[in-house]
Image 1: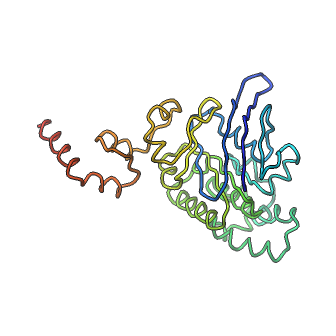
Image 2 (image 1 turned 180 degrees about the horizontal axis):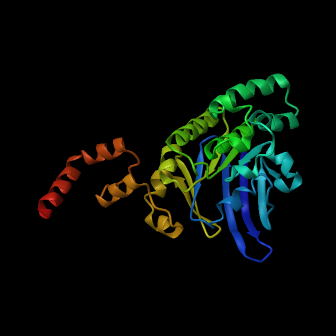
Length: 280
């Protein structure tokens, strides 16, 4: 699927501009993170991709077709959106019914629904919770219930809005497996998040937004080597990346192995030992 954004502008009824001339293209299956401060326009932006919001000016083209030509219901079959707050997306009496609802509306056969149900319930960790009412789940489980209900519809693109909120380590690990599974299934995953450790672990492509604009788009190496962009978007690199930058590493590092490899180079050992000697 190809999603093309052309000079996208969105104004609130008050006249405030939420999006100010966005231009970009999403295609392929490489997961993409969308980052930026609160109020940068990230959620407003992605809600235009399946018709939840409509442009004030500009165009959103899905495989060359203007999004204005069809309803939100039509586009939601192709581009699934998982809300930040799962309570806004749950409305049936059991997890199983939540999972079955979307594909039933699409006319998917019972056999195929059951096949998807087994696979996706396992992926989101809710195999033993299918008979439970969604509002009896804990916060983490509710989030995975909403993710599962969208995955059941097998969209070409899935948008995750702050999926790490309220998650523990196990939840984040499960999210990583979901993102990997989407790529293997040739589905594009767009994810809004403030968790930079999660970003550098799961995404090589990043879009940085601020004040309704896209400041920069590129690889994680490019983005976290652009201090002016990070400052303008009020984004801080992951802790280990910041330590490497303070030590003078010539390129960003994102995990312990990368840090150790760079640090073990003679020049950095010498610099570090010299600093330690001077502090004595």
